[in-house]
Every structure is written in C-alpha cells, then in structure tokens.
Image (cartoon, rainbow, N blue to C red; front, side):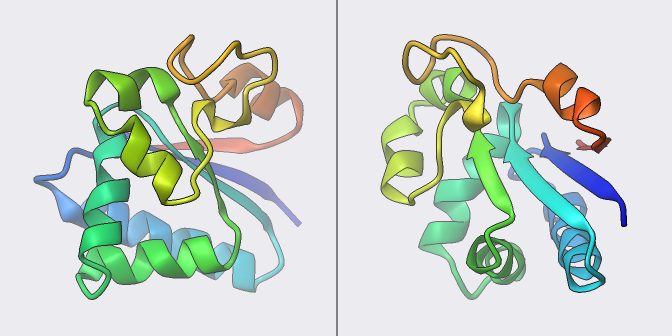
Length: 127
C-alpha cells in the first residue's frame, strides 16, 4: 500500500481543488492506503469555512476526512497570519502540522515535508 500526504494550499475562492482532493484522500483511505492531510498557506482558511458551513460541498468532504482521522494539521504560521489560529484550534485541528520541535503555534511553517518524504509519503500539493 502507498503513503500519500495531501498539502492543501487552495484559496477559499476556489472550492474545486480541495473538494476533489479530499475525495481522493478518502478513496485512498478506503482502499487501505496511508493518507494524511495538511492545510497550509491560504488553504488554512478552509478549516473555519468548513466548520461554519458543514453542509457545503467542501464541508462534506472536510468533515468526512476529519471523521476518518486524515487531517493531521495546519500551518500555525499561516493560520496566525490570517488570524484564524484560534478558530483552527477550536476545531480540534493541530497547528504546525505535527512538526516536531515547535516552540508554539506560528513559530515556523508546517508540515515538515522533508520528514514526510523520508517517511515514504508521496506529496500531493493542492493549490
């Protein structure tokens, strides 16, 4: 089985890429592959959007990915820049994408793509 890391950078005004890729992540998970999803850059704005609008197209895919445990985090630096870090934490999504050694949310960019690649993940950038 493969290992896939989806890096969501898609801006909030373009729902197609995120909806499609969250569906692909679900399909891979259903087939037994190891899947992880991170929100980075403008893509961090999708978390509060999907939390506020769970019945939207993106909301459906986001909540399914969250229910499956596929969402591993969001870039704390970017979330702080967009002033949504509190919203993301309230949604139960980890900031900094699980990057080890972080002093706190917003201290550096996450996720650690080098660590993901070394762990055998194929990186899929969605932007």
